[in-house]
Length: 483
Ligand code: ATP
Ligand code: MG
Ligand code: MG
Ligand code: MG
Image 1 (tube, helix red, strand yellow):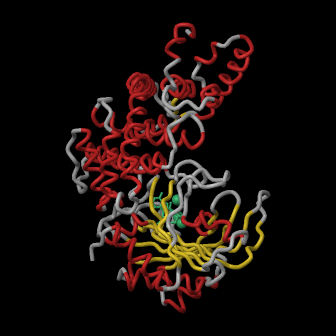
Image 2: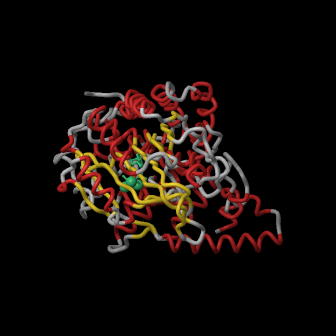
Image 3: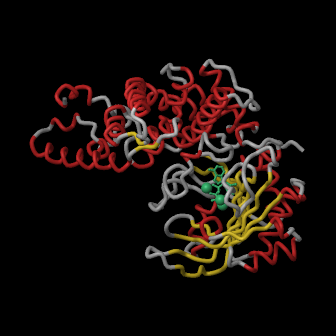
């Protein structure tokens, strides 16, 4: 049966509550007191110390629907957005957790029952994977749950040993995939063609057993625990009979709002026409990025040239550039999408309502700031790309151009890479790093002699100044001097 994302969220929490889990609210995207983490990237983050044994709660079982951002840091999906049907920078992770209360058997059974009995998914569309050394989990799936061996795969550590970050709780995991059917490209889990959108990973069940220390060594946790994560948008796609997350209720609302704000027709999801494909992938990027933008600003993150604020700026400028690409106009549009996010997320996150106006203001300011350099930067890049096309065999945008775009035009490196990728090209990151290094040294020497460096929006200067909106404008003043 068709089910809204909101209904799935409710059923999930209710199911685990009935199984003795405490329903815990989502924690913030900006992790409290955890310098090892850029943003909350999974449901377990707020329970990290409970797993490690340093924090004791009144409950041993919990369930949540957690806001997550995977842009920058260890789990970074920024580059996937626009290219896959299943990745977002902002998404919600449904999860159940056991702090020494139950382990593999119960965790696997709970997940299976929720999918096959509560959501009533057909068993033959579900595939499972286990960590290659985890005979125990494999036995539970095959002998107790009755999954067919033809739909079970053993996988290595890359996919089936989960870690929150470079340090912290970790352990082998077992994952459940949904087969969207042969109209979609992609191979079964564990196969070389796995990385398509046909067999989509919906639920990861992690058997938390270790803590990884600074030096990489694993020490056992005080008690074997469970941490699971199911992407709400992915299971919503399954329940709504669409293969792409971007065709679910929430995202349709957002892409439609985006095409209205941009004044372009909304492309039909079933067309294979090249142009339309590009348009819908740009709209998907915009729809995805407005959610992370809104939720990050709601927590006080502002676009900056350093740290979390720089991740936000990268997300925002990537979306703004896609809008520019669709219309050729640098008229601000992105801030006008805040309303649509409040429409679809405001019920689950009521605090968005009160912040809407402030969020719009921050976005608008960033749009104005980027508009100053967006089209000239794009012209420079287009020229460079055209030159490359003419000189056969050059497949990398030169580091100097990438640096100039970054330093003078406010194009984050991954933005330039994103544009190059649309043409099947890459960028010379090494060359970029060298330019960056040279700039740092230059500004060090300059510092000794004059105060004029304050005008230089060089990365070195810019990154030491927590400047919100005025970056990348001072260089114009110096451009004559520099040449
Ligand atoms: P994938 O292999 O598809 O990138 P993952 O293995 O990186 O996913 P996990 O770290 O296991 O993901 O996270 C648990 C669950 O969260 C996944 O099974 C998926 O349902 C969901 N999820 C992970 N990353 C994203 C994302 N970028 N956007 C939406 N949902 C996601
Ligand atoms: Mg991933
Ligand atoms: Mg995976
Ligand atoms: Mg996974």
